[in-house]
Each structure stands twice: as C-alpha cells, then as structure tokens.
Amino acid sequence: MAQDSVDIFVIGGGVNGASVARDAVGRGFSVALAEMNDLASGTSSAATKLVHGGLRYLEHYEFRLVHEALAEREVLWAAAPHIIWPLRFVLPHHKGLRPAFVLRAGLAMYDYMGGRRLLPPTKTLNLTQDVTGKPLKPGYRLGFEYSDCWVEDSRFVVLNARDAANKGADIYVRTKVSSVRRDNGGWIVELDGEDGRRTVRAKLVVNAAGPWVDQVITGAMGKNGARNVRLVKGSHLVVRKLFDHDRCYIFQNSDGRIIFAIPYEGDFTLIGTTDEDYHGDPKDVRISDGETDYLLKAASEYFAEPVTRADIRWSYSGVRPLFDDGASAAQEATRDYVLKLDGDAASGAAVHVFGGKLTTSRRLAESVLEKIEGVLGKKGAAWTKTGKLPGGEFEPLSFDAEVRRLHKDYPELPATLTRRLMRLYGTKARVILGSAKTTSDLGQHFGADLFAAEVDYLVREEWARTAEDILWRRTKLGLRVDQAQTEALESYLAGKAMGVAV
Image 1 (tube, rainbow, N blue to C red):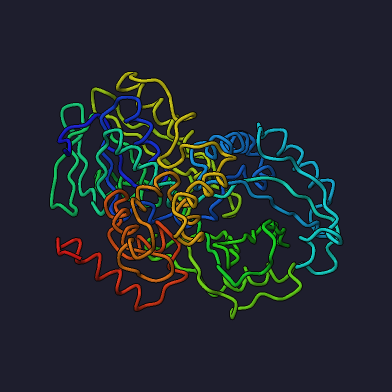
Image 2 (image 1 turned 90 degrees about the horizontal axis):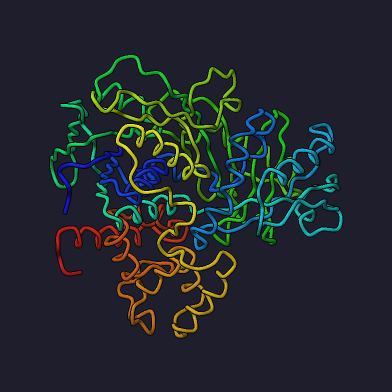
C-alpha cells in the first residue's frame, strides 16, 4: 500500500535516485521515489554501458574518482553477475599521440589502484600476431590490453528500483513532482501521475533528477538562480559487426579524446562517445551530423575497412548532468559527483545530487545516506557492498554454469532464448519461464524471441508500460523487431492496461 508519509522522498528514477532509494530502505528508512517518465529513460540508458575506472580521467588528475570507480567494478559485478561481466579492452599505440611509455605508466597505475581480485591485469600485445590486430590498419603494431566491465545500464537501474520496492519502497513511474514545499520541519510533495494526483509528506527530500536537477530547484521547489549543472552531450552509434573476436577497443583520437568500439548484442558494434556542451532541453537530445561524422572518422582511423553511414543500424544520445566546475572544455569537466545539503531537521532538509556516473552510483548513495543520517539520525548499517540485486544470486564466475542449468531444465526451448533470459534476468528467468515446455507455452510471439510471458513479467515486476520500455530499455530487442511487430506489442500492452483479456 502506498505510504502517505515517508522519511525520504527521492525525485528521479535514474541510477542515482534508484541507488539512494535502495540503500535507504535497506537501512530501515521509509522511502518513496517518483520518476516523471520511465525508469532510466534519461542519462542512465544513454551511456557507453561500462563499469569502469575511467582511464582517461587520470590525465585530469581525478585520482579519487578513478580509485573509487576501480574498486567498484568487482563489487557491482558480484551484486549483479547476470547484467555485469568482464571485458578486455585493447588500446593500440598510435604514433604521434600519447607515447607508449605514458600508456604503460597509466595502465600500471590503473592496475595498482584497482583492487582487482578476479579481473586479469594489463598485458602488452603484438598486434601483428594477435587476433585483435587483424581488423586494424597494418600500421598498428603495439597494443595494451586491460580489464573493465560491461553493464546493462537501464536494467541496472530497474533492478535497483525493484530491490528497493521489494524492501518496502514506493516506486512511482510516469509521475511528475509538481510541487515540493517546506512545511513544519518537513516537506509536502505533490505528485501528478498514472493514478492521478497524490500528496506525500516527507521528512527529507533527495533531488536526484539528473539533467533536470536545477529545474526541480527552480520549478517544483520555487527557488531562483540555480546554476549548478553543465550538460554535456554524448552520442553513440550502433553499426554492423566490425570484428569477430570478443574483445573491445579503446582508440585515441587526435583531439585528445578517446572512443570505444565494443561488441554489442551479438551482431553489432557499439561506437562512442562524443563530448560537447548541450544547451537544449534534455528530452530533445539527438545525435547530430557532426557527431556522426566525428565517430565514423575516428573509427575509420583505426579499422582497415572504413566505417560509413551505410553501416549504421541505430544511434542514441544522452546528456551527462556534470557539476559545473568552470572547466573550459566539455571533456575536461569533472565526472565526480557533488552533494549539497539545503536546510536542516528544523526547517526541512534536501540533498541535491549533481553529477555522478553509473560505476560510482552505489558509493554516491552511501555518501547521500551519510548526509541523510546527519539530519534524520542513523538507523541500519551500510549494507549494499555485499548485497545482491534481484536475479544475481550466484557467484560472478558462475554465469555459464547457470546458463547450462537453465537450459538443462528447459531442454525444448532454444538455447539462444534461455541464454538471453539468463543474461537479462538471472535467476528470475525461471519465474518468466515457469512450467513452459516449448515456446508455444510462452504466449503470444512479438518477433525475435520475445513472448508474452516475458512481457507480462516486465509489466508486473519492472514497471514497463510501453513497447519502447520493453524493446529499448528492459531489452535491446528493438534492434531485431519490425514496425508491425512493435505495433502488435503496443496493442497487447494497451489491452493489459485496460484490463482486457489478451
């Protein structure tokens, strides 16, 4: 039952808001969270999808951020080994850019600061002999290979929210916070959403609205002159599969920036990202022709076969809500997070969250909780460092064994389907499959290997409402279904929303 009064109200259903809600409710606070759109529909689903230390941040002397991020790689991997897994990145030495000894030194520091237990260390490659050199131009001979991790970013957000809800938090999606006002040492939060208008009283508010954090301050909270966030746009291309091995590339560019080329969804390659200031409405962000040209040119500098517009299968863009530290260039602006406490227990306290990244979201949440406890007092202890996300109840190195077990229990289902479900849902795949013997037991087919059983689960357990929620955020099956199949899915969802038997 929805609570009319809570200890903490979180504004924003991106990775920071969902992580704060999860941590807080797990410590014993009563919590509600509101997201004006779908969970992870902004920045949190538009990143390069890495759990990484940020190798290039070393050049900007962000040692605290890099150290914290590196230490989080294996913590998050252990929490969600179904949606997070290790990757090996190949950094070719480009003559005329950073010298080889600088790359070696940076990677040695990366290994030293990382607190690795399971991730393998950096090694040197002869690209004329290693398989990773084959797709590259013949001039690249020396390379370095190091470890970071992949994450299904939007699913990471949803699973944090699901865990919070499992522990008692109220999660409101497609619900806009229209007003937040102080009242008698706390807050009155006015909501306008799927179930109409609602009022919730809160002792403390966390503003984790990402690119909209200043808008919450000036709009819903009614304050003037909030200028804390610098919006930096990052765009990505998904192109045809450019190479057959499972390793990734990190390429230096002549402007000092880097781009990644990463195997994506089995049949594609992800190329990104860009860095440029953005001054529009975050909801309208799109890749520009200039960014497309930039990414294609940067990739073609390395690959023997040029990457062209004809190779593009999809693109996406997002804006990073970086704290405005006055840096002159977008790529130099700090990626670290900044927290500001406004008010106190007597007047009503709010914590505003600026910046941050997926890799450090759990630690950011712990830092927010320190500020919350300074106002509301301490309840339970910090717990998320060893906590599991839903579906991740197995050891980090046991994923393939879990896939084999699932396929053994459902031998008549396609192995590609059982593996995909394990990758997205982990142990919860069994909830989706239930007693099914064949695909005909999974209900209506919507194209690719998407069936009604999975759709129903996403509606029931993961707040999915639209085909876009399902095809592009809960899964990436949008790359594999056509318009007619998408419309069939929309029709099915509309029927469910109206309570029609489907």
